[in-house]
Image (cartoon, rainbow, N blue to C red; front, side, top):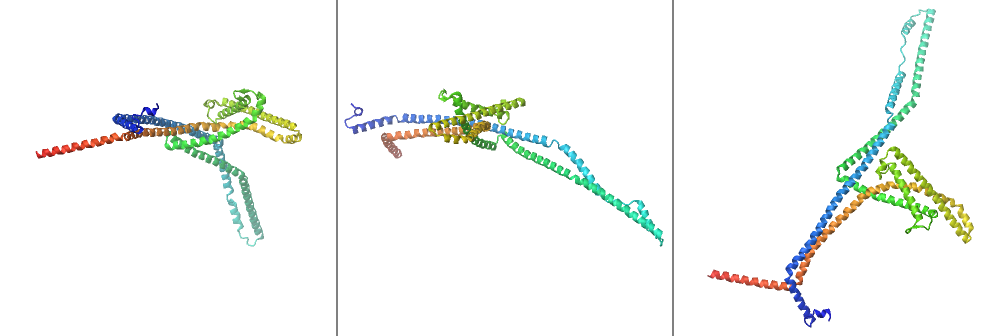
Length: 482
């Protein structure tokens, strides 16, 4: 007996289906009130649970945003303090190196200007007045000779003597003036030197004023960061996003350089440590090449930390100057040694390549091409050795974008996580509302299934209400009649 035959009440399937429909409708009609209650209660439970989850996610998002704001403002504060500190150091160096001799220079300039002013005043003096005896001689010269030749001759000699004395005095005065002007002329180089020094002082003062303006702008930004203003947060957030992408791009370039470096030293390392030895699924030669590159990057990080260019390791930055200088030379020595080793490995790689080319040419019987190729082999050898020596020093500067990437990643990850949490809260609220209205939809579908009993109920209810209304009308009419 099949399953369909089991549920047949009568032999006719259509009639049996109608009977089952009426039976099920009757059962559903009788259970409609508790069924609707439970459906709505279940949908409300799901709705409340999802709304509670959305509230929890929103609370977590608020805490995360507050944390991101604190981290962002703290990073901005550290960067602003570093910029302000470096600007003050530059101003201090300018003052100490360029303006420390300014008081002595000012004193010398004052002395020279005073001396030059005195010489200038002396050089502009008018010729002195003639002595008093000149008036006596002039009076004697004006005496009338009365035709006496002797008196006339004496007076003429006196006149000539006076003219000679006057000419001599004028020549002496002119000579003195020429000497003074010669002194002033010899002072011209000193004037030019004074002008040049004053120009340098002016440039230094202008530089200090310019740096003071930058410090003022940095201090304004620093004050906004300390206050935690929204503008400072927006500026720092956009700056962190741009720094993240720029540093990621630079790190990608550095990874490309590391790959090239790996290609240069991987093959000769196989000759040194054995090309058939494996650690897991990786060759020992490849692992050795990667370790050398990582050691070079580590030495570069320590060198940048010792130079106080980066601040990834506060312990290194807190060392005293003597130990820090020693660490600089030690890390530079390691880098130089590793760069020399890589240059040697690059040379060894070129030798291996030439040996392979020579072997393959001999097997082909083509020796002339090998000789022609060997004439220009020194170019590729020099290029590979240069790259092997320069790339380790180029990888030193990976520390700068690495620090920027690490500091900006915190902000970017926080912003992305906050956005994901807000999206999750929206989805949970949406699902909660969908569950609430889904319960109402299910209730309406339930009524649609039992539309027959409900229709009968509404008809019967309407007739009963109509009978009650007519009975009440008759009663009221009878009461009025009595």
